[in-house]
Amino acid sequence: NAGVTQTPKFQVLKTGQSMTLQCAQDMNHEYMSWYRQDPGMGLRLIHYSVGAGITDQGEVPNGYNVSRSTTEDFPLRLLSAAPSQTSVYFCASSYTDRRGYTFGSGTRLTVV
Amino acid sequence: KQEVTQIPAALSVPEGENLVLNCSFTDSAIYNLQWFRQDPGKGLTSLLLIQSSQREQTSGRLNASLDKSSGRSTLYIAASQPGDSATYLCAVIEYGNKLVFGAGTILRVKS
Image (cartoon, rainbow over all chains, first blue to last red; front, side, top):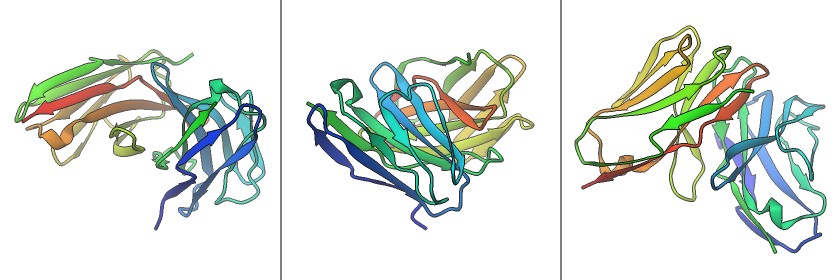
C-alpha cells in the first residue's frame, strides 16, 4: 500500500515553461486536493476534487489547472510558470466522510 | 472565513518534559480536527484525528482534545524526546471536506 505518491520530488523551471506535477493514490479515496506551502503563509488549498470528473477551485487557483479522469490520479498543471509559483506542493487524499487526510511527500518547485 | 491559530509559534524544552500545543479556530462549525507532524523538508504525517462528536483521542504519548464550542484544541505530548522535534500542524476539516491549517508550532526537544 503506497499511499499518496507525488512525482517529481524536485523541479527547476524557467519562467514561462509549463509542467505537470503528478499525484496518485491507491486507497480508493474519493477526495483529492493540492496544497502549496510557503514560509509565513502556511498551507493553502489550490484545487480539489470530490470524485472522477469533478474538480473545483480552492483559495489560490490562479495559474494552475487540474483534471480528474480516474479515482487514482489528480495531476496539477502549471500553464506558464512564474517565480511566484516557487513553493512546495503537496497532494492529499481522503474519504468523503471526513475520516482524515493522507499527504504525499511533496514536490519542491523552483521557478527562475 | 475560518482562521486557525497555533500558539506558541516555537517552543524549546529539555528532554523529558510534558508539553502542550494549542490550536484555536474562529468558526465552530467544523466536522473534525486533525493534528499533523512535519519534519524539515518532508511531508505531513497524521498524528491524530478527532471527530466532532469526540472530546479527545490518544495515541501513545500523544493526547489531543477538542472543545468545539470554545473553538479550541490542544495536543499534549508526554515525556518529550529529541525525536519529537518537528513542526506540529493543526487543521480543521470543515464543510466540503476542506482542510484549513494553522501556521504550526516548531518544537525543539533538547537532549
